[in-house]
Image (cartoon, rainbow, N blue to C red; front, side, top):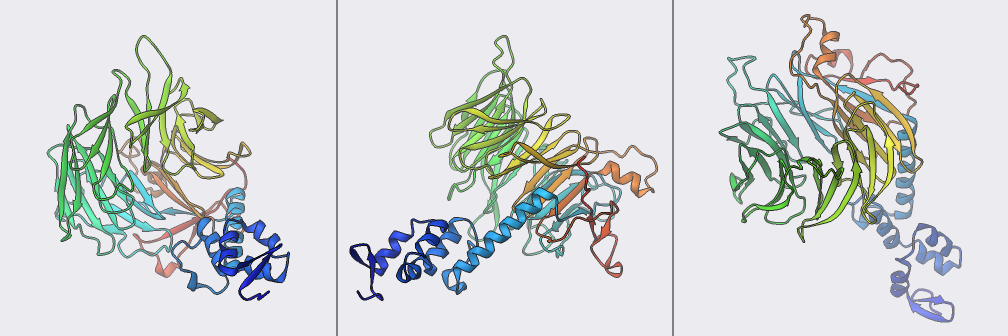
Amino acid sequence: INEMDDVPFFDVQLPYELAINIFQYLGRKELGRCAQVSKTWKVIAEDEVLWYRLCQQEGHLLESSISDYSCWKLVFQECRAREHMLRTNWKNRKGAVSELEPVPDAVLCDVHSHDGVVVAGYTSGDVRVWDTRTWDYVAPFLESEFEEDEPGMQPYVSFVRINSSLAVAAYEDGFLNIWDLRTGRYPIHRFEHDARIQALALSRKGATVATASAFGVIMLYPNEEGYWQMATEFEVQKLVDYLEIVPDTGRFPVAIAAAGDLVYLLKAEDSARTLHYVYGQPVTCLDVSANQVAFGVKSLGWVYEGNKILVYSLEAERCLSKLGNALGDFTCVNLRDSPPSLMVSGNMDRRVRIHDLRTDKIALSLSAHQLGVSAVQMDDWKIVSGGEEGLVSVWDYRMNQKLWEVHSRHPVRHISFNSHSLITANVPCERVVRNADLDNSATHRRHRGLIHAYAFAVDQLAFQSTLPICRLACGAMSSHNYNLALAFSDSTA
């Protein structure tokens, strides 16, 4: 046998390329066992192509090519070890947490984040951005076009959204600002509505913005020359409460709008179509994925059927599942980030539920909060939920065990996490600071809202002190650019 070209498969000799095609269906454990059969099988089982594919399949170094590293098996082992370390840090609260500095004398209105970059809007009209991956962002404040000679007269920020390249803010007076994070802090486009903006959506990828004002929904995106334009406008029968853009729709953007008891499917270059309508059953929450939409409906009337979550197919435009039968209203649902065939939801009955889309049954129900659940997200092993009482809870749902929790004064309105970080935002229900002593920064801090960024990639034990520790040197600190590394408490709240 020519071991350079032929590979012994028991009583058959195969070409090396064909042997590689067979081995590509094996996992890491099977490849390790095959490497112990013979020297020839060891060479095949450690081929760079096989381990590069394994890295890609498990989500490691997706943007790398096979020529970037000389030993992909070692790279795979290092990625697995880092993944194990991050999971251990999550479970043991091992890491650091920083409080993002608020705008002085302003109340937090809305928060959104994408891949570690956070945007926040305030009652002062300010919009601020942080990059929690580097803690050094070139444009911490995004400027608007309001006159600088009228301090304190800028309208409140109603909504903010951000993706990898754009930041968007909607104001109480109906104005909309769009910034390109790669070019600077000044708006690249400004749009004015005739009435207040009730809902705002931004695509996770690409450059599509959707807004709902009065009884209309518009979509904006740049043309081939880069100039922003109104792509299409839809007319709806009721005021829109929730608005989301469907990801990965190709050339023409697609949005889902919930207005009272109506759910609309909005496709560019087409008229608005009613996806769901049951009189007297308003929609209470909404989320979308590439091919499905999930929304909670409140059951009212003489025939009470319980509050449910409906899952619709966007391609077939029909209902696939009716999930849950709760007494309380479903307040939040996360379909886009959940594992395949699963979905997580939060309810006013203080419970977090995992729904199995294959069986239309509740896979797990957790009594998570003292008041209603206001935000929730899950991945392949954990759930992070936020409540109206200000509590953030982290669960290992496979073990049905609460790992840890932290508490702040205001309701949790935003939760976003990945394998190595967590962003939470506590946004006040009232946008007025009631305490008269605004000079007392500690008292004022409790009223204006908080944004926390947790980093679990820090390989160090949690700090024992409960006092904030500054990340920056004293000489580098300024009133508008500092970050606090707060300690994780050893005891569970």
